[in-house]
Length: 85
Image 1: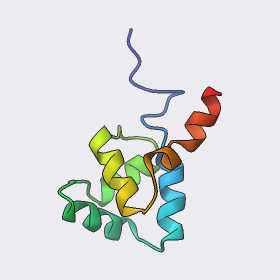
Image 2: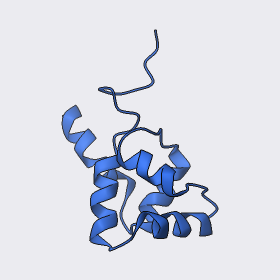
Image 3: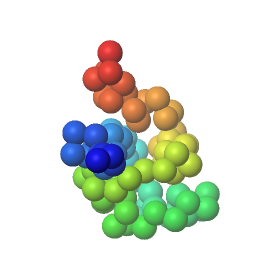
């Protein structure tokens, strides 16, 4: 059977994304609005699900999230990359 999860998580960026969002003093709604301005349709509930590792993140969404949070995809994946070392 093919697993669509890693260690029972739907994504590996959720907690880092939440941390960076809070550092920027952005609400989930504000982050959602900024993403929508880039053409990425992730609503408030979607942001909540990503942050709680309940929603898969597509590659183009990862790039847009990094842009809005003024970071890099590598930074969002940092904790996961440490596990691979």
